[in-house]
Structures are given as structure tokens and as C-alpha cells.
Amino acid sequence: MAAAEEEPKPKKLKVEAPRALSENILFGMGNPLLDITAVVDKDFLDKYSLKLNDQILAEEKHKELFDELVKKFKVEYHAGGSTQNSIKVAQWMIQQPHKAATFFGCIGIDKFGEILKKKAAEAHVDAHYYEQNEQPTGTCAACITGGNRSLVANLAAANCYKKEKHLDMEKNWILVDKARVYYIAGFFLTVSPESVLKVAHHASENNRIFTLNLSAPFISQFYKESLMKVMPYVDILFGNETEAATFAREQGFETEDIKEIAKKTQALPKVNSERQRIVIFTQGRDDTILATVPVFQSDGTSLYSHQQHIEWLFPPTSSPAFAALHLFSFVILKVKSPLLLSWIKTRKKLLIPMELEMHLLEVFCLSWSLTSP
Image (cartoon, rainbow, N blue to C red; front, side):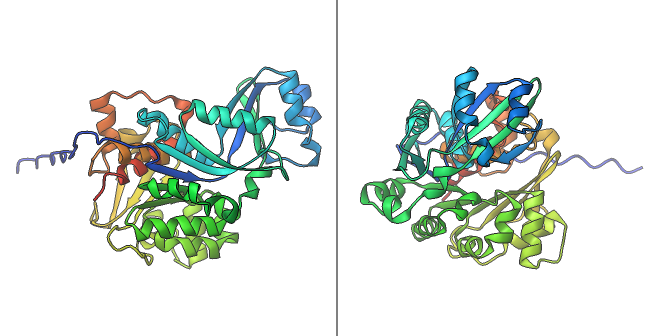
């Protein structure tokens, strides 16, 4: 009987010494929210018609909820919002220098805005908010009861960002120009698509890394025109399986296979040919799909196995941490392999708090970009 074939030896990771970093090397722009977390009682949930483990946008009946939450219960404040979370986690992983990460967004001129600025500063993020008095600072109440939580988000000022009043100002654009990696969640296409496009064009024109998250199925459905205007500039695209499937339907890909969707998305027209697009789709507890060039498998895709590389880091449903970890790796380590997750686990023995969730892998990917040629 023929001898069994030897298992292929794992490829060695090409890891160089960490590079010296400068302030404002990573840039994010999005919808800032002040997360307000408190353990509440059933009466509070009933008063505002809140369901266990639900996520809703605030309505008129929730107008007093946020102030009452603060007055009645012991609360914790955190700088939140999808992009700001990823940027904040990236800064946490980078550590030094402080203010390596920059964030732009819109807040109100109010007490919650002051708290949000304080929390961003405590996280060492160089946050430069456009402040206006037409809408209050965006908030997200996390009402905890036992092992359950109910989320109520009031976007408010987050929807009021103005390109001409903030991004276009010289003192702010200087910070954009200092960056080498850019990360924006698709949610911001609903607020200021012209701002997203300006940053994306600048990144491509200067051969820097521009990354985008699909964020939610409705972005591909109802903001398709804005999304596809920016897609040619996207170097790294994040999404989950639901977002990928919706994107495929809207683009007429005529397939429901996530691998095929990733390959077709990777092959979409791209302005900067110096950088091949990377597409990363998570699938809950199933394997995460990565499509890029050159290919890692014969079918043109690569797999991160949750069992070997991802599950140890964070809950598989958590999207922003996914991007956050990639951001970190691109900024800090010159690692030329998609197996960096495993390398960090085994070589660095890095313990990641579970509450950081999906933002970690986004940091991982975006940070890797900074050291790519």
C-alpha cells in the first residue's frame, strides 16, 4: 500500500519588526453615538415599550428615555457608533502613539456631546467633531435586564454632518492627508456620500488604503448609487453573509454562493490598479470568506477557519471588531498572510476582551494595509 502523503507544511508568515507610527495615521469617519448602558427594571422597559434583546430606532415616545435613564439608574458611558468603535479599538491595540487614530463625525452642542468628547479623549482617539445646535448628540441606550439587553438608538446629530462645514476646512483636511489607512462604514453613505467619495478619491489618488463596510442590507438596496460610486476606490470591503447576498442580488450576480459573490465583488472595476481589492465576508459561525489576488485557493478564495483562527477572538456575530483587528495588523505588523490571526494567538498570546466584538478583525485588516507596499 502506498505510503500516505505527508501533510503540507504550513507556510511561514513574513513578519517584520513593528514600524514607527505617527499620529493621525489611521482615519475614520462616521456616525458618532454616545453609548449609555445601565441595568434597568421591567417597569422601565414597559414604560417605553421595549422588548428583550431588541434593537430599535428611537421614536417620539422615547424622547425622555435617555434623560430618565441617566437620572434613575447608574450608567456607564462609552464613545460608540460603528466606525468610531472600530477606530477606538484600533487605537487601543496600537497603544502608542496616542492619537494614531483620527475620527470625524457630527455631534450636538450639549452635555452628551461633552461626555462623548471626553470618552473619545480617554480612548486616545483624536476626535474632531462637527458641532451644531440643530440636533442633540446621537445616543444609544443599552438597557440591561438579567442576561438580556434592549438597544434604543437616536441618531439625531449623527445625521447632520456637513462636508463643506467640516471636511473641506483646511485644518481638518490636513488630518485626512496625514492618514495612510481610511475606514468608513456604509452607514455614513446615508449621511454624507459626498464626504465618503472625497476621502475615497484622495486615498486612491495617493495610493493609500481605503476600506469600507457594507454595514447593513439596506445600504446595498436603497443607497446603491452612492455605494457604487465609491466602490471603484475600495481596497478592502467588509460584510456579513446577509449583506453579501443582498449586494449580489442588487448587482445581478445571479448566485447565492458566498464564495462566488466574494470573487465577483473582488473583480468589480477598480481605479487604483496598484492595489488589488480584498473582500472579506463573515458567515456567523461558518468560515469567513476572503477573496483577493493572487488567489489563495484554486477557486480564487481563501478561508479563515473559525475553529483555527477566529473563534478564539470574539463572538462570530460581531462585525466592527472584525475590521478593528485588521486595522491593527496593517498599522503595526508587516505580515503578508491571511493567517495573521493564528500568528497573534500563538506567538503574541494576545487576550482579546470579548466585549470588543467584531471591531477587532476590522482593525486587523486595516492595520495590515498600512504596511503593504
